[in-house]
Length: 186
Image (cartoon, rainbow, N blue to C red; front, side):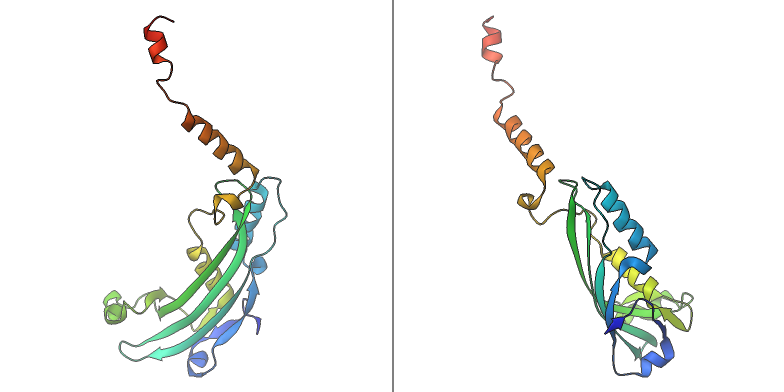
């Protein structure tokens, strides 16, 4: 297993190989992910030092016969740290994504894949080769959670504990507690 982010796959050649493309990568060569991780680290409480996200990819290319397209199947795993929306500290984010894509030219008719739409998602791509770095980056960005949070509130930092304590204190107060006294003129 090597660094797969720097590989440019010749699609026609890869379809004929039986062995899947497999390897590890980090986000340092992917500008979108690098920026996202750096921004998260600077937004976190205490301005943490960003660490590149790391991951692995296994990808097989095969020729699908009816309708005719190149199928990309495999597994993507990625780990990084982003800002928890509860405590504003860095929280681990783990992405595990199955890949089942139909590589199609952008001018291919949309209905050409209707028969296999349940099994494959259409991925438009023009060109004879596929640069894995941008491909991986896009898959990771599409797979990240919309809201990042620690697995449980107990895992959160001090800010979440302070807010939780304030919320509990507000819940114990009743809005009409002093109303009877006010009505009696006290």
